[in-house]
Image (tube, rainbow, N blue to C red; front, side):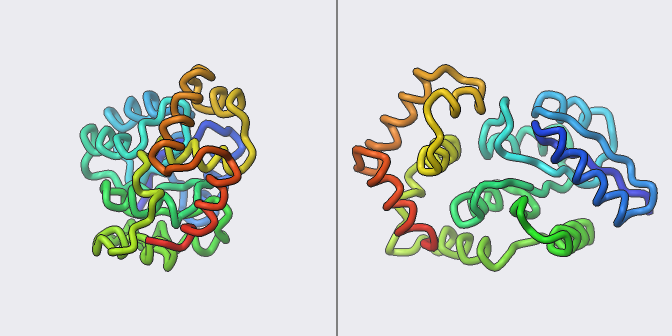
Length: 211
């Protein structure tokens, strides 16, 4: 069966790499490549796509709302989140929102291939890390992860702040004003009851493996 894929990532080198892998694993696959959500929805509105590789950190991305946008245009296409963001912090959000799998960009080729095969066979791919996080979210553990108080975009920005990104770098990445980043930062601090990056980093470290 001839398969069709859509790779949504704002980095051309990532799109190129994924395309090479797909051509290696499947016979003459149809591969569409775009760098933003708007173009992705345009493709999905007029083309048959079996699986979407979705980077959740794209300029016009809208967190888990992107999943609903894609399903609204084509509810038959499968969605595999392919992200550099930690599975412990993000996978459960997107799996609960309706994606069919979540794979870290640093995963081995075999893991990516297995994830695709499972999803295309009408299944869902959930790694051990994602499964633990998802179980915690579903069961609503008594010892809740304070990071769950953050929205998807707030969590993305908090993660970048912890990694040493400055306001200007974050604003350029998300194509938003630096003042907007400052607003997000203040909101993050308020929700997590911290007042500096060091405390934020410690909170991330402590709750890294909490559901």
